[in-house]
Image (cartoon, one colour):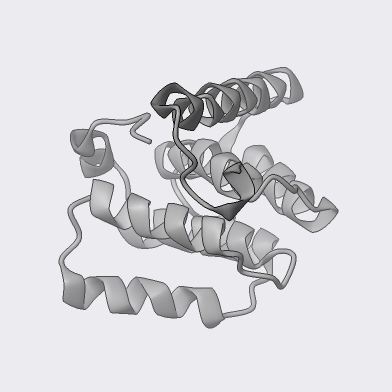
Length: 147
């Protein structure tokens, strides 16, 4: 999944971006495999070196006051993290109310209104549906659930 070129991450604060993803991943107090995979893929997309990745993974262990944590972050960072955070929240096929609440707080501080937020959710849903058709194109089962 590559909705942004690696250069897009040069104009954002990586620490804040990864913190927002950690907030959304932690919102329901359950870190699923798909969410962790997405978190890792964002670090890879930003070309973060392996030693620094360990520091970012540690963000997943923290509890956050979302409002206090994001209130002073820049809007570019928040907007990119918002979009990718929605993808992260939906990656496991189940979006929890607590994830939606965290996303709404991030959207508010990013200056993203409800109409644009709905557009982002729709884009994420379209993307997930598009990606789900890939395995069937191979005409082979990739895992036990595909049989």
